[in-house]
Length: 235
View 1 (cartoon, rainbow, N blue to C red):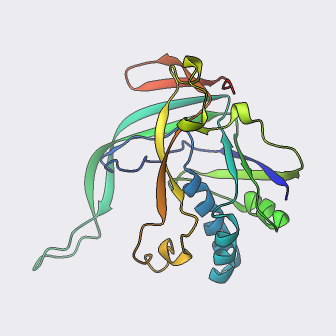
View 2: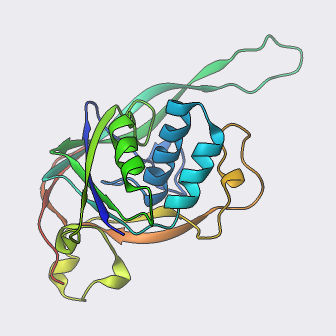
């Protein structure tokens, strides 16, 4: 098995709402969740081939494959008060309105440099590389992205990739001024039917929540923004 070294560039701001937060107060993590990236590849496989069985095959292949994510050189997080549209509730006896206006807080990330993703599938590395090149968004559907990847026989640079907090040495340098956040990961026994976007998913929670930190340290902060700079962990 070989590692796939991928890079994703964003043509727009990026946002991934952390789990357990309200859509009206949507704080973002500085990197996507492992579940979000895995499902983005599955979504790409289905949309580019028109074949759900192929998406199921990719899902089973990558749902528990080793995955590392390295943030860009700098990440700026901006907080906005926005007006948005959301699906309206149907009231009996009144004309149906497909959408209604709503207000809320949402954070967005501006990446300075590519987001680097490393994944190690057990087989079909060439097909996963191809899906990187076909990837068009990650996170919200307005986070326009372009990917590229290659197969490498070497390990990812571990000091520059995310870590579960329990993995790190307790040195203060590994935690001071670094963001810590909870993200969704796909359970090893999850089924495609639980995440199937075309049938609404079946019962059962396919996710487990894990607490991560990334090799970013706060560099500057303002009233509604913060800038992080990549600084490696002590391993």
